[in-house]
Structures are given as structure tokens and as C-alpha cells.
Picture 1: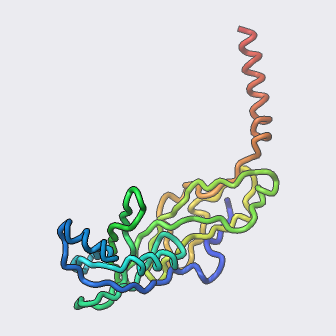
Picture 2: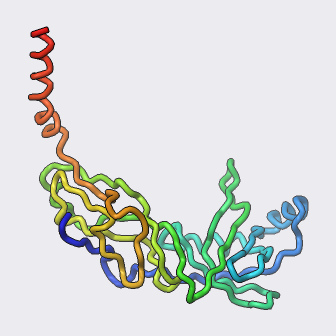
Picture 3: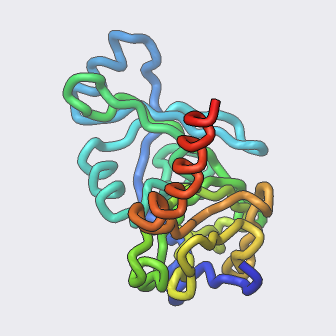
Length: 222
């Protein structure tokens, strides 16, 4: 597309740090960790570029509430660590391990970040508005589900909302067409397709028909 496409709908796009309490964890062996889980706690770790790694434990219910409050799978946490020399840490939920059968949380990894440190993450892409091409019978296709972005923690977006109202049938929105929110840098090949509006199936079949007929005539002449 020749025009730039907005990547946000309103001022609610910024990720907010959610409060979570944790304690330093002393048990590390398998038996101790099992006992910890039975008591309603989740073993966790926190690490970062400038911070020494720490073994933590968080309450099962508190973590479940945190996930419920989050607007997306990317969660920024204001972690209050009881008994730590650094009582408050800003961190991203880096990885969550679940039990393969019952789905309960077994372990959580937190990636500590600094307020002045630009962070790279992958955020979901969502289409915003009623696509012009869809009104004409086309189909909106999400080609790229997530986009890598870089920003300060305070500017990290929960998701990227891309305006598709003017997207015509047969046209695409590429990464380079998208204007990111303030303070956010989009990473990747600018020519990669993010969203596209495919032609109706009937139109595609009709367009292919002359070629198919010509191929059939060529066969008969052999």
C-alpha cells in the first residue's frame, strides 16, 4: 500500500506493569519443589542483564489473578520480592511451564528489565475496522500473527491494532506500511506481508478458467 497505516486505535495500547508479590526460594531439589507446589506456591526464577539470578516462589492464586488481569500473553510485572535486597523489580513473564495433563502452572521464568532499557518482544497483530475488500466479497487474511518490536518498558504495546478500513481486494499491508505507536520500533523485513485481502473464491476460479480452457485445447491438438 502507498499510504501509511495506523498501528493503534486509542491511548490504551500501552502495557501496564501489574503488581505481584514473591518471596525468595530456598528449596531447589525436586522433593522440596514438589512440597512447595503442594503448599500452593509456584517455583520461579528471575534473571536479567545486570541482575544476579534469584530463585523465587509466588502464590498460585496470585499468579492466576495476574494472568487474568493481563490484556495479552505478554505480561509486564512490578515484582515485590520479600526478603530481597532489591525489594521491587520490573520484569516480563518470560516463560510459563504447564503440567501436560492438568494444565496447572509448574514453573515461571521472569526476565528483569530496567526502566531505561529498550526491550525486544513479539506482540500480536489485530485488524481494526471493517475492511473495504471484505465488503466486496473478499477475505481478510492474517499473514503475520506477531510482530517483533523494540521499546522502553513504559512504551511496550499489548498488541498492534492495524487499520484495515481502506484495504481493497487483492491488496496487502506490509510491515513497512505500518506507522508504529510513539516510542515503538517495528523490527523485521519491511516488505513482509502482515495483512491481505484475498479475492472471492468465485472470482479466482473465473480468472483461472481461461487458462485452464487453453491448456485443455492444447492437449487436444497434440
